[in-house]
Image (cartoon, rainbow over all chains, first blue to last red; front, top):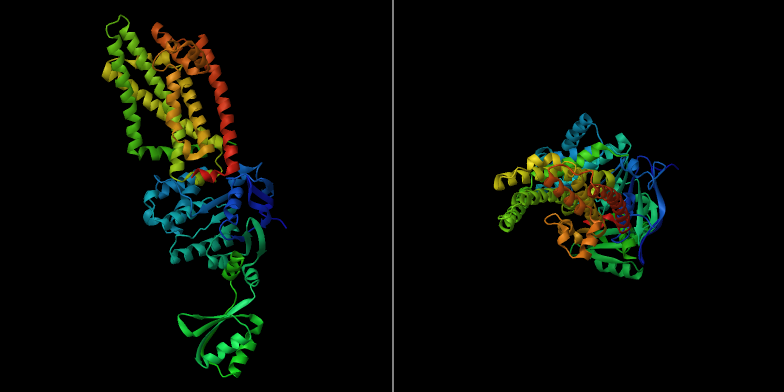
Amino acid sequence: MDYILSVNNLTKKFSNFIAVDNISFGLKQGEILGLLGPNGAGKTTTINMLLDLLTPSSGFIEYFGQDFQSNKQNILEQISFASSYIKLPRSLTVYENLKFFGKIYCLENNFLRVQIEKNISIFGLDSVKDRLTKDLSAGQLTRLMLAKAFLSNPKVILLDEPTAALDPDITLVIREFILKERESLNISILLTSHNMIEVQEMCDRVIMLKDGKILDIDTPQGLASRVKISKVRLLVSENFKELVNYLKKINLNYRSIHNLHNFLEIDISEQKIPELIFDITHIGVKYTQISIERPSLEDYFLKIAKN
Amino acid sequence: MISFSRIYAMIYRHLISLFRDPIRLADAVYYPFLDIMLFGFLGIWSHGDQANADMFLISLLASISCWYLVYRSALEISRNLLIDIWDDSIISVLTTPISITELSFALMFLGIIQALITFIYTSCLIWLIFSKNIFSLYLIMAPYLPLFLAFGWIIGLLTAALIFRFGKSVEFTAWALPWFFSIFSGAFYPTNLFPAWVQNATNILPLKFLFRSMRESIKINASQFISQDYIIALITIIVYLIFTFWFLFFMVKKARNKGLNNLV
């Protein structure tokens, strides 16, 4: 398999602490790969090594089939980075910031002008393009950061929590933009996010990191299916006591939800749901609402984080 | 490969910041004024009744002007780097293709611009306050100016190396280090006033030879850049500049082992 980005046996040790422990993975052309994990899992350390902010203790990184350490500048010209945790020069306006970064990526003047206008429009920055960056709101700053990341038409983009601090409507626009750009320019994206819905909707594959190690790599659906327990929600109208006794008898976990004693959430494996429905109908339980929630990526994440 | 576009981008970024920051502009005007006034009048007071008072004063004021070449070219390197750190924008810059060499060249060029503006400004001050025409000495001083600038770069790059390695905790060195060199380099007085052992120690400072040679040139009203002092200064500055670049790359490499993200 030819990867655009290939990480091989990457390790980072800080004196007696191993932040990243012998991880290997690849990012395919046009793929959006998610990097998930609880705090301290090694996501930021990995991203820092992929950007040459941090030197690996061992292992190697290849972009476009070239060794990163020996072709840094050439490779960094073709990749870009955006994070809602870093800032841009405060005393430059939005337009000046984009011009500054465009020049750093050696974009030709006419192309740069077109790209700046296009990105200012896409990211909804028209009304603030002459405003100093220090006067922008957190959401506007994140949008500027993304406008900067897409300015040079990079082949690979590393996005660290790209939509944190954004309003839901803008988040949606930006997600759509990223997916569209990926489609039209075949950009490969490595994404970290704590927003599970975002990861589930955007990523083709997800890497689950914990304690510096890769626990799993799969599609979001594949990872979610590792959790075997679904949730059945019932709003019971008759014979509530019989239902509780039955659940106790067959040893199923349940809880009241929405502060209603007769609204129950039952943990049960997906295959056993028909049997449950049959049995409770048989003992005379009546319900006015039923919903079944299949395991999500969030359930998988919580399971890993708790363990 | 070095890209002029990237060097231009950094100069563009910092010049805009400079002209939008009234504190920095005031700082560039106020401190040279303070030194010119302080040392100028101290010079008149202490030498006013002596036969060579005029020559002493013009020599002192020219030295102060040249010292500001060193100081400004040093400060612009370290302070512009610190501004990106204080802005938390250094990571945005370091995750682009800009190399440490390009970043250094841009900061060095910013140092030249600031230093030359300050040099002309101090010359004007001297003319206005003391009626001494430093402009007429520019031709004599010309061979010395690039070396003063280059030594400023050495101090600035040394400071930048320390900042890369130790972060904001050593930001005071941006101001402290240049003034430390001013004491021992004979910018404001000849180094032969020091005890013998200190005089010997100052032999490692090319500024000492530069200031001595320049004062001699002003005294005889002819440039002394073929003198032994000048050549010693030239060679040492070249050697130090090479060493400083090596030291900067070494410290950045060390900093990368810990993570450049620790700069913010």
